[in-house]
Length: 117
Image (cartoon, rainbow, N blue to C red):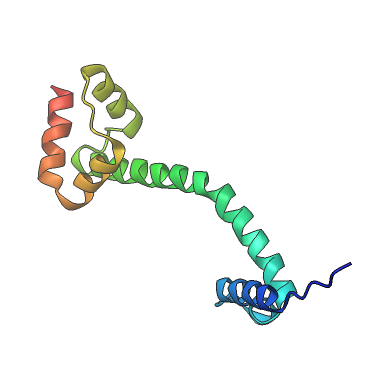
């Protein structure tokens, strides 16, 4: 059987793994075996939480919209207002509404008034 020497490829693999693990703490950034293990877990977590991030932002936008509505009228709740907006066919997404509520309260007030009327 012919002999296979992996020196160049092994070194390339080792370098790439350690480069990816740069910034990890303790042994995980220095040793190849620990770095491989850490990268496998990091990849799994990033894949699993990529969808969670979308829900987190949606919740944040809902809270910001609710805060903007309460500033206009303390009795006005997010759920009632968003339901009324959907019935009237106002199709502005939550991200934009939250941004308007935070940075441009006058414009947000006009949108809220149009849904009320």
